[in-house]
Image (cartoon, rainbow, N blue to C red; front, top):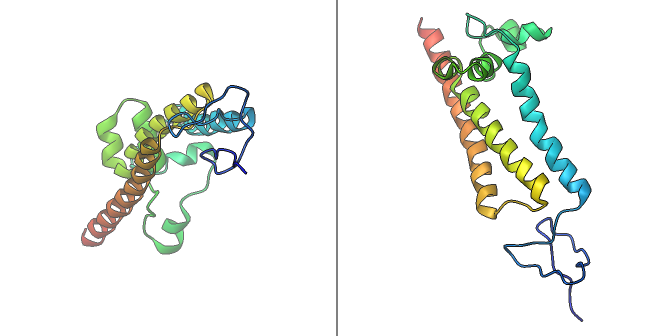
Length: 166
């Protein structure tokens, strides 16, 4: 009894006539999977587009209020900024080409915006080619996301410490 080749998603699909699956060339993704990749690419791009329509707050945070969102609950309830404070302002600076200001406002936001562009590019490639990226790309994206989360928390701790000392 022979088993069917496994796709990277772990599911067994019948091969197309004449198709040869290998580790480097898995079977093509289904149309629904390609649509999911296209939507995954579009979400961060839409968020960057929205950020580009906003005027960065001169205070370094609060730009999200232009979207009708409430003030940061952490600032109201605890009197301190949250790790995401300044993230929208950072993205707005980023989309206006003000990268130094983006880094200064929230360094995690800057690197998250860079990550959003790279992630979208990879997802567009998946949707276009119908194939998952190489495993090393998936690892790089995963570790990059972890690194950005750590950077955001370190940036937050530094800002909390500087506010406490001021």
